[in-house]
Image (tube, rainbow, N blue to C red; front, side, top):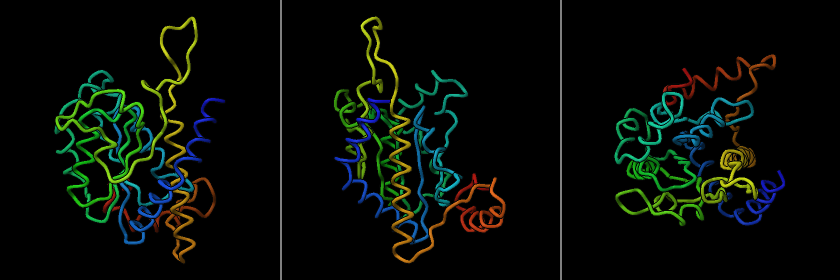
Length: 239
């Protein structure tokens, strides 16, 4: 907890400008009735679910969940799939990614073909693409992408989750491997802080932010259903 707190303080001190710029992009996306798409493979997909259909969260968020890149159908195979070039394109072609939307791509190492291909696909379609990745980790490893680029070199904007090489924070003299991953907790803070900023930006500009209420609070169902009706055609998982 102490080490994660240090990272959060560094995040707040050093990335305020990047966060502000991302907030402005995403707020403009929502103002123009666009969608925020979120993609990650492996454990990174957890963060796309973190901000989807969430109490107190933005409604127009579309998690791009490709099950063969998640872990529940086979973790080892999912890792192999993430290293395949052009693997993600057929999946993305099935989704409504339109100019004016935003795409957040999450990959801590930023070296595998799938997240880089996803970022490039988004740019081809006219989306603003934001990466959540570790720049130090990425720089420590060669890219596996045919272009030689890593994720942070393939997007419009980067938010650095500050993870160490291998996504493990702690060491111990009696343990040969580093341990305790931080990408999920830091990534969740980045996303929630960014989306909170979007909500406040919209409100301060006289717009009503599309925010879910908890379904376990009386009176929330009608509020939430009205918002779902607006966005469900472009966000299949809202149906």
